[in-house]
Length: 344
Image 1 (cartoon, one colour):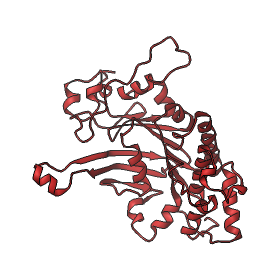
Image 2: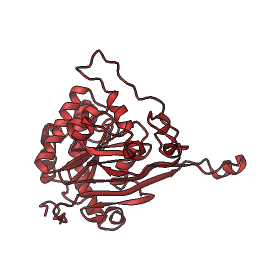
Image 3: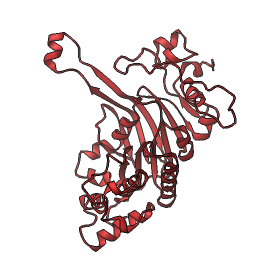
Image 4: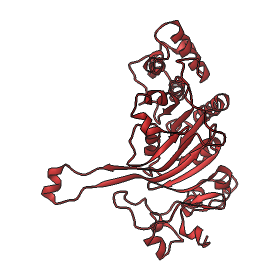
């Protein structure tokens, strides 16, 4: 039981994952207005941003999602924190149906346990609020602490925990650097003492040296508080530093999910191999890097069969007509006919 707010947390059964996403899907209607469609005789346009994603995250561990822009990573993040309602599938958090709980009075208690760190610290902080008000907002909103000395002390503790000072409370966001703003965002996310943090590219807007500082703070907080992370990034060097497991997404679907070391040492899916081949390596300065060939298909009109087949050097007729299942293969899950048939 938490001392602040007297919130009773359910106990996850031993060995059970804290977070379980099963067949998560989100479809957006991006059609023109009805009258335009009638006059131009055009059908509705549906965008499958996420199409059947399943994964599990154990308590205290980090799952990283990687992939090119537009593959659905951020949509998965918003589904997990309840900002989007899934079109299909669901999310179990600590043994309960999270999306069903979000719609009830008890949903507020669950939202205290699941928080999000957004990508852009320049856009996610209210420029008219002081740092004290920004970090105090979730404390007030959830009825954990009201105004007074206790609130100021708690905000000061949160700032100190992310490497800032309690003296920063009366300042405004514009008085801080990008890395400091992201620390404020992390402090705000930690205010409700969450167990699960969804991090949507939290370092992509920062300089490389500042990225390292923020990542180290997040790793320290995870170690001290037993936090569970979903970490979204397109930077594979960052992913290698922070993750325990890595999921590779392509056009709304997971194509490979494996432990970090297995995925980086022996990638199986052709798309994972292409992503890793494109990384510059310190000891291979004379070797030409292999760029990820081809273009990402239009998500409004994805290819039939395996969505990656137009860019895949191992594609055959089956890949063009039949969508591969996401199956367990050698200690990992892969969606690839070539891997399952032993052609790779």
